[in-house]
Amino acid sequence: MPRLSRRPLLALGAAAALAPALPALAQEEPRRAERWADLRGLVFGDRPMEDAGDALAITAPPRALDAAAVPVSIALAPELAAGLRSLSLIIDENPSPLAAVFRPGAAVPLRHVSTRIRVDAYTFLHAVAEAADGRLLMTRRFIKAAGGCSAPMSSDLRAARERMGRARLVLPEGAPAADRPVPAEVALSHPNTSGLQIDQVTRLSIPAEFVRQFRISYRGQPVLEVEGDISIAENPTFGFHLAGEPGGELLLEAEDNKERRFTGRWTLQPAG
Amino acid sequence: MDRPMLCTAAGGSGGLLRALPHRRGVLLGLVGAALAPGARAPDAEEADGCVEVAPGLWVLPGRIEEASPANLNAIANTGFIAGRDATAVIDPGGSLPHGRHLRRAIEARNLPPVRHLVLTHMHPDHVMGAAAFADLRPEVIGHARLPEALAQRGAFYAAALRDQIGPAAEGSAPLAPTRLVQNTAELDLGGRVLLLRAHPPAHTDNDLTLLDHATGTLWLADLLFVDHIPTLDGDLGGWLRVLEGLRSDAARQAVPGHGPPVVPWPGAAEPERDYLAALRDDTRRAIRAGTGLAEAPGRVAVTQAARWRLRELHHGRNVSAAYRQLEWE
Image (cartoon, rainbow over all chains, first blue to last red; front, side):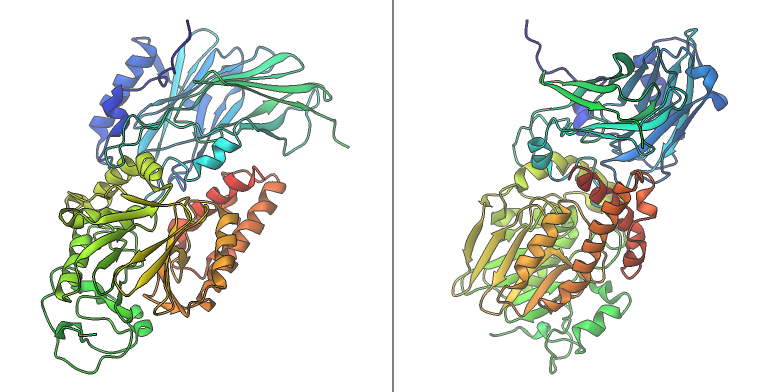
């Protein structure tokens, strides 16, 4: 049976999607705590959760310059990265809060991931790691959204649609070696929009188009799998560390909610 | 053209007046307070804050500030153009109170009825005052891409305005466009024909400009920033191209979206062009050097940003927007 366009990972109903939780000022600690309790229950049920301490750290600008693409990275301590089952990124105040779930391949421990997210309002970011032994470890960080005309969606959506499917790979420090993991960033051009049912002013209906799954592998070994959502910025971009002998093929496979499939392939020539 | 007495004003030059602090304390409610009649210098600010930059063409300059409860989001230049039969509002303002102020300014001048509302682009500081004109049922003119842009962002902008200016945001809203411009169109106000042009993505992807042939005035809205740092929400390369094309227009002056009510054309575009070109070139260099999106805003075109007001609010975002476009070149 053909699947209809899947709903975002965790949308809190249509009303929430059209009216993000606002006002979102700083003195709202009890409401924020309650919201996190709700979200946590929805995603993880009643499983116990511990403070991750130094094992997990989120890096994000305290004030988002560009609400449409806030760079976020998460670092994991070696003990946690070893055998990590999954890492979830939750943007509490977004209409679809569960932004991404990262699942590392078996070959290389996931010490770091980065991406770019949309931010609708002043919000906590929560990162929750499921360790090898099944424990849930959590850390959080507060960020302020940008003001003015900085909206969580980009302006020139048409350009993103026309480019859809192009993939990029950036290796700022060159190709990896067996004993030398290097930073890598993979991106797919895609509008990644939530869509709108019917806009009250213009009566326009805009379909949701977003990438829901990314699989990145190197030399045939899975490196990283990401379940994505509309809180990931346009042209979804993921950074991670890549290790292995040079000369292999890095493969990106992605699929969006319209069941379009995209691939990117790069042969990583050794440096020099 | 007959001018009611309250259009006479305190004299001085538009340029000097821009430098005075709190000159827009008159923003709310002082429209009826006529000053003593006297000789009015051209381009002088009138009692209600409006400046007649060309016969029958008024600009209500916005403050170079971030939106706040004190300024009611009256931060963009808005205004109106009167012909023999009709008046067109060019950007109805950033909030319902701002739009109402503009409407009172029009009514106080005994101008022909407001029949047209031109929305130069989607940004809330330009369109949220439209609700003040809803009962007049004007034709609402915008770029062909404006409806989609408003649909995508309207709810976010409405919520953001409540955050920025508080309860005064109540009732603020754009009006749905009823006439879309694909390439060019004419707007006839009676003995005065305005040329409307829809541009490819530049400041935003729905920029619309007006050319008033009669007075050689180009209403550029946010395609032109003066003093206030340009803000990029469309296409950087596209903006530079559009700007280049507009330079050859037969206009002697332009109305920027932010900055003085009127500036000489095309000379006043040079600082903006220099900034945008530096933003483009320096961002390209950063991408080539492997500088990430997180680090680029603190490193790119920092010197060129220094001369602009409100750079601390917008320059980092401009770098981010430029980066996200240029990395796909």
